[in-house]
Length: 373
Ligand code: ADP
Image (cartoon, rainbow, N blue to C red):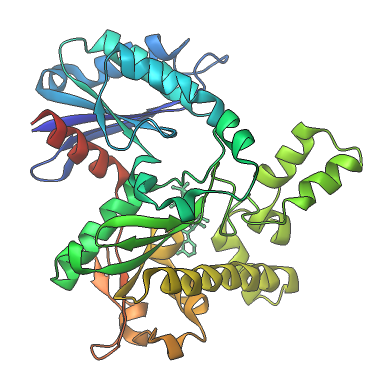
């Protein structure tokens, strides 16, 4: 069974044709600069026609289309087959993700036109975290204001957290329902999730993907008073937005959003880069400790995404000093380069540490396949 996975941005369409039985990518590609001079197409509709051309005879093998949708608000708690009502629902929560949801919808509309005879499925970044208890999802602000503006913790990267948790259980040879896990998704965007018996009970991103860990260009947690302070000092909202979303994180601290640059600079003695890594690791430990407490126990910490999968030194730096919580690495296992999900803690460690490569496209394809049978 083949699922066509679409990740539509405001000026791009990323796509993969995935065989969910063999888990192989049959075909993958990217259209960029839609609507711009010299771009790959004039808009999403034209772009989807280009994609269909590229698919050629493979288009006939598509059993379902899986769409990545960033924000499902409080409406969507699981993947859904897309109909006009679902489109309206995604539209209704677009204010919560003004950059992403309209772009995702443009992809959905174009793909439904191009492939009208197969079911289309929306898979939401937020859905997995809808199981969080109210104590974790509620911000301590005026309840009426929160209700009026939809302000609560939603969390993101849910597709990745859920996929990685499932693979971790398989590697550990134990049912997911019996496991207390902390998943650290450390990429350009980063988030931590506390997963109890396969259900998300807390996560570090919030109303938006700005909260939590130190990211490539995003600040993660700051005192909300920082925003007020900057705005009172006369900075316009758009400027404050750009500072926190686009000019903070590793970029703000060390001058590059790319973790490889930052580690290289730190290795060469750059003090700013070294501090950036300390702040990055300090924040991760903050969440590991918090989630250990929320879970009331811990079976495994799982590293995933670009940094989590590829940077043994940074995994060690993130967990440094947590031996008293049972968190230790086997130096040789940690250093090993592999694409396979694996355990990197010693056999007798009280808490397992794993590396599990994430695969959001495969996860979306599997979710769509499960839904449409
Ligand atoms: P995205 O969130 O865009 O999907 P990725 O999950 O691909 O991002 O992660 C990108 C990040 O992973 C970048 O900061 C990159 O520098 C980092 N990364 C990839 N490989 C390594 C490595 N070997 N060492 C350190 N960082 C790495």
